[in-house]
Structure formats: C-alpha cells, structure tokens
Amino acid sequence: MADPMETKESENGLEFLEEVTKNAHQIQEQVLAEILRRNAATEYLSRFLHGQTDKQSFKNNVPIVTYEDIKPYIDRIANGETSNILLADPISFFIQSSGTSGGQPKLIPMTAESFEKRMLEVTLSHPVVKKCFDGSEKGKAMTLYFIKKGIETPSGLMAKTLSTLYFTSNGFKKHAPKTCTSPIETIHCLDNKQSMYCQLLTGLLQREEVVRINSIFASVLARCIKFLEDHWKGLCSDIRTGSLSDWVIDPGCRYAVSSMLTGPNPELADTIENICGDESWEGVIKKLWPKAKYINSVITGSMSQYIPLLDFYGGGIPLVSPSYGSSESSFGINLKPLSNPFDISYTFLPSMAYFEFLPVNEDNREKAQEFHFHGVSSKGSLEVTNEDGNIVPVDLANVKVGQYYEVVVTTLTGLYRYRVGDVLKLTGFHNNSPQFQFVERRNTVLSIDMDKTSEADLLKAIRNAKLLIEPFGFVLATFSSYAETSSIPGRYVLFWELKSKASNNCPKLDAKIMEQCCCMVEESLDFTYKSLREANKIAALELRVVKHGTFDALMDFYVSKGASVNQYKTPCCIKSEEALKILNSGVIGKFFSPKTFPQVESLS
Ligand code: AMP
Image (tube, rainbow, N blue to C red; front, top):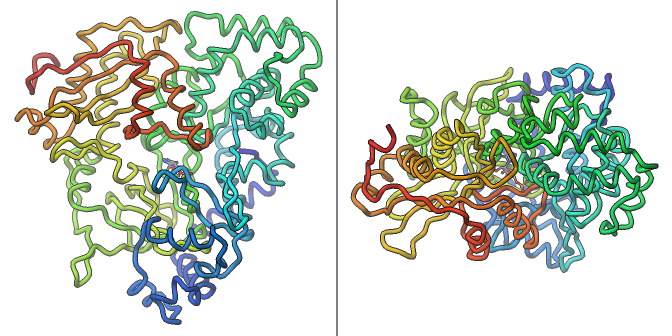
C-alpha cells in the first residue's frame, strides 16, 4: 500500500514495534480493560457482565461466539436501531468482509476512531520491509488496487470493504500520487477491466521508476499478469500511438491516463512488445519492471498456491508477505520480510485488539502435527478445559511454541470473544509477542465419508503432486476442488489450471503423468482418507485440467456476486453449482487415479 512514512516516521515505526512487543502482556491487559470500561453497559455485554468490568468476569461469563451469534445485533443496527446495543461509541459505517453469512457478506461495525487506527496499522509493516531493501523508498510501487461499490443499509449506514475504505481515504489519496504508479482515478474506477487495463498501462509507462510490485493478495497479481497476457498488444499499441483505447470509457480513467500518455512512444512500445512477445513469460515481471526489488502481496494460507507462479513470472524477485489481518481486526506483521515463503510468521501486535487463542481440537491438532512436525511430538497438554469439559482459550501471555490455535478477538468495535475462523501455529516470539504461522481457515474441508480433508491437508497434497509436472515445464497456476457425491461412492475432484513455462499456449498433457499426480494427491492425504479409499468407500480421485482463463471466469463470477477483487481468495473448495458449471465448462482433460488403492507401482 502507499507508504506515508518518511525516514523519521520510519524510525519511529520501528521503535514503536519494539516497544509494543516488549510490553505485550501489559498492553493486552490495558486493551481489554479499556474495551470493558467503555462497553460493559451495552445491551450485549450487560447480559453477561451485569455491570462488572473486570477481566475475570469477562472470562467467566462472556461467551465465545461466531458471527451468527452477533448477527441479530448487527441486523438490528443495520435496520436503524442505535448502535449502542453492541458498542458504546457511535458506528460510522460497516466493513464488509469476504466471508459470508447465509450468502450475504458479514458486516463488521466500525467507528471513526477505530478506523483511523486501522489505517495506521496498515502502514506498520512499511518500515520493516523498507529496511530490507535499500533504496526502495526512492521509487514508486507498481500498484494493482481495486475498489468495490458499497451497500447502504436501511439505517443509512454504508458498508464497504476495508480495502475500498482505505483506497478512498484522504490519507491514501494524499500519498498515492507520490508513491503509486496508478492514478487515483484508475483505482477508483468501479469497472475492474478498465481499472486493471489502466493500472497496467500507467505501471508500464512508469516502468523505470518502479521499485516494488504491490497487490493485497497474490491472487490479484496472478490475475493481473494473466490479464496482461491477453492485453499486452493493446497496451503497446496505446503506448505507441500515445492514445488510450476507445473501449476504456470511464471518464476518470480517460482523464488520468490521457494526461500521462502525452505523446507517441514507439521506443517503449517496442521494448514491451519484445518482452511480452517472448514465447516464455519466465521472469516477465523482472523484465518489464527492471528496478523492482520485491513483490509485496500476501502469499500465505490459501495464497501459497500462487507462489510458484509468482516465482516464475517474477524471475527471482523476492516475495514479501507483509501482514496478516482481516475485516474484523488487524493481527500482526511479518518482521522477517525475507523469510522463505513457507516459513513466514506474523508477529501479533498487542495494541491491535485483545487476543485469545483457542487450542484446536485433538483431531485437527494431530493432523496439523503430522503435517508440520514431521513426527516430532509436542509435549504438554494443549487443551485447557474448564469443569464442564469445554476447551477454554488461553491469553497471549500463555501460548506455547509448536501448538495450534484458533484466534479469538475482542475489539473496540463490538466484537467480544469472536472466533475469526483462522487456525495458526505458534512458531516463536519477538520480545514478548507471539509469532504465528497461518495454517488454514477452519472448516474448509472436503469430505465424502468419515474423511475430513482440511485446506492445509489439500495444499500439502497438491504441493507434492505438482512436483511431478514441474520437470515437464508446467506450473500449477491455480486450483480448486469439490466433493463429487452424485455417484456412489463419491470422490474428490480437483480442478487445475496449468501453465507451460515455455509458452503461453495450452499445455499438452501426458495422461500417465497426470494420473500419477492423482495418485500422489491421494498418497499424501491422511490415514482416514486412504483407508476409506482402500475399502472403496471413496472412489478414485479425479483431476480435471481446465483451459487458460477458466479461473479468471470463476473470479468474475464471484466478483459479480459481490466479492471484492482485492480481497478475493480462490475458493479451495467449491460449493456453488454455478461456480462448478464455470469450472466444468473450461475442462480440457480429465484424469483419474487407478480404481484400486493403493497403487504403489504407479508412483515409482
Ligand atoms: P477479509 O475479512 O475479507 O479481509 O478476509 C480476512 C481473511 O483473509 C483472514 O481471516 C484470513 O483467513 C485471510 N488472510 C488475511 N491475511 C492473511 C495472511 N497474511 N495469510 C493468510 N491468510 C490471510
């Protein structure tokens, strides 16, 4: 994002991080005390606290909830009741999260004060990253940012995505012209295609100034590069003639881009044409933006599937995953921007919210340990239970290295002991602040019978399988899956979009290798899956390879249903019939594991 901190502020930023991480425990106590002091009298909290404001009463009486539990309060506020039923300070607007409740985006209340704070939190990772890349403050970021139209609730309060709020904030508008290649009008254009075209065009026009490539999530950058594959000829023609294509009709885009396209530039057009006209697009980002020092995008969790693609396009430019947050709260930042993408941890900042950590249940934990510890068992009991046998969350001060937790937040904006739904693994500490690796989103599972395959299980299995296609010059661009249960027994179906390293043409697939990929996925799944498969309670896994652009069409579909381009995450598992139809319409090859399982021979 934009980098509003100058050198002095940058030093202050680093000092601030040291300070808060050293005093993590005290700050957490203060944050909770402040939240309770202000909000104990709200209708929601007084049901549980009866006027008490101390931590123990909070811990003993306030229930741990999900969005569904607080939705009735949110709905009442959205329909016009006073917001102090849930939080004492007046709500200024809602943040729309990418998560949905009954098909509707979740609405998170936001106050003016908390929003200011969130906007500052967005910039906290900047000085840390800057420190790692000499001179990165001297140029601009090639930015790929998008906004989304908000909705007005019956009460008149607006609901918008966090990124939309940030990109339309005065702070961003003030700093963007100095730090971003995209003119603000192109970011504010609501038509994603026109916006993307113009942002790529202005990024190319300023290619010599670009020192980093920025998108919020890696999926957005992957999408934009594919868009470039389809539109580079048009972009070069616009640069050559010095006039913007007629199909771009958004007045803001036309005005902003035309003022940068000051005249014909055949030299630049030739350079870009030479780069993009290459059979292989390996290293295309580095070639187009030769001074780019790093790519700044979230690449953990479900975004990790884009790492090979960005490595390929980036030609060795480091990938930096700066921070971890959600619509509900900011959580932490990556203090080691140069870490290996698969070792990234985020240091929780205790000033962001009051955090508790719910040990994940035995089943998930075992699976997680199998995945991450390679058989090294962890000592000590994770599950701190109360007298009713319920698992109770632990404070930030009491988390243990190597263990898995679901994060629970309490904020100044009406979330009290709210389960975010993310599972994290504690990897260490910076001063007294815990550092977590993002493991997975809870409840994202494929299941046919007794098997429960989580997002992390599937990612791991696919990571193993795609090693088999890499020697043949293929990159797995993106994937999804679904549980096909219309036939008995049911089976897992994977959708893969592949990219050939050598050219942008449709890859030619070798059936034997693709079948080996199916076997490798199955081999990499857990014991329950494999036993059920052996007992023929799950049928052979199917791999459907889809043509180039199919996952773009999927993203377009979700965007048309209200998802934000910035916050879009390719679903790891598809539930919607319409989405399945889109993927199925792009299928160019179907491959299966052998009927019987295990098939050791086929893997050798
Ligand atoms: P949203 O509320 O739409 O912004 O989505 C927030 C969710 O995105 C989080 O709860 C995570 O599941 C995911 N997310 C955000 N940041 C990261 C990150 N750095 N690594 C992995 N997942 C992330």
